[in-house]
Amino acid sequence: MTRQQIRIVLGLDDTPKSYVNIVPYLRSPLPPPIDPTTDAPVRPEALTRIFAKECVRQEVSQQKTIPIPDEVREAMIRFGRPTPLQRAYGLEKMLKTPARIYYKREDVSPTGSHKTNTALAQCYYAMKEGVERYTTETGAGQWGSAVALACSYFGLEAMIYMVRISYEQKAYRGTLMRLYGAKVVPSPSQNTEFGRRLNREQPGHPGSLGIAISEALEDALGSQNTKYTLGSVLNHVLLHQTVIGQEAKQQLNLIDTKPDYVVGCVGGGSNFAGLSYPFIADPRFKDTEFIAAESDACPKLTHGEYRYDFGDTAGLTPKLKMYTLGANFIPPKIHAGGLRYHGSAPTLSALIQEGRVRPLAYNQVDALNAGALFARTEGIVPAPESSHAIKAVVDLALEAKERGEERSILFNLSGHGHFDMTAYDSLMDGTLSGESMAT
Ligand SMILES: Cc1ncc(COP(=O)(O)O)c(C=O)c1O
Image (cartoon, rainbow, N blue to C red; front, top):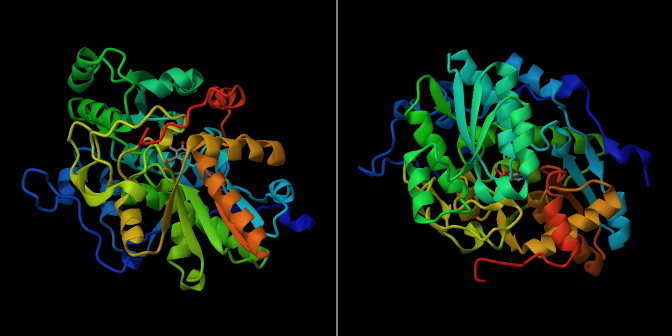
């Protein structure tokens, strides 16, 4: 074991100063969002009723890099950037693999995941233009926690619609958001027309991310001085996450390593993009393979269609060109709430179309077993979402062992699972179900 590789840390001043925009690096122009009533591209100005103006500017930007405001960079440093890159010696030893496994520790954020990176940026831009209240959805609660903290930091009110099944499975996530000062309701809720209708049709409806997005949008559109913030999928959100990959590049460079594989899990695509896009945009990494690990209970990348679809269930958003299972798809109640989204980021979908990213789907039982192995060998309990990436990494490491190849694998530990103990409880007591889309 070389001591220098246990944990590779950067100085606070090494926190990136700009975001990397993947759009100009795509081989074909990115299909624009379209207005569902006319099928014409949506004018950016129309989006500013919903999103902060600077976020809309970034959404349509063709610039290769976009500067990070000093206040956002300071906030990211306050809340843990740059994050460490760690070598998974324990996991490697247990697997008896010649592969070297490195993981980027987004779990060290105080809210527990990478989501804080974009929450801070979006709240800053909203605060600067005078917005007083943000609404949003959350699945597993990681995004809601990040928005709650970022709103409190920049002085905004936060209203969070949390998918009911996750609200029940992860009750303390709600507590954390309220502790940061946010209002949280289970979705479908009684706050919106759409939520009340679903509750009437199916009392105790488990909810989905698509439904919670519809509720948060309805609230924002009907309220004063309120905008909506999204935690994944859109270009500007993925852009904000590229601080992760830029740091990882610096860290791997310090130990003279180029990854053979870069792996991340995919809900909407933001943590995968955050880690991988700075590598994909850099021709020095043309031989690296990029692997997007999704849930087989919500397998839009491996089993969905590449077409225009709504981002939410009620059809309030513009249509996006993406891999989708259909906006009405309600995924089985897996514990990785953040992977229960019917669609995927347009930029990630385009990269998959171009054959530059390989999607793979995993069952939650296999994923949580890999997560439990990681906990035992590395001491960190991964979020159930991140466990899907770990399952992909374990498979790659075992493949390398079989072939006797010394591969290097980089993955994003997108979050910790300290609020996900019911998932690991049911894994250990043997009641965890392996529901996939087909079952
Ligand atoms: C820890 C964690 N990882 C991954 C995801 C999936 O989202 P994304 O694909 O946008 O990174 C989530 C979403 O809530 C999450 O909380």
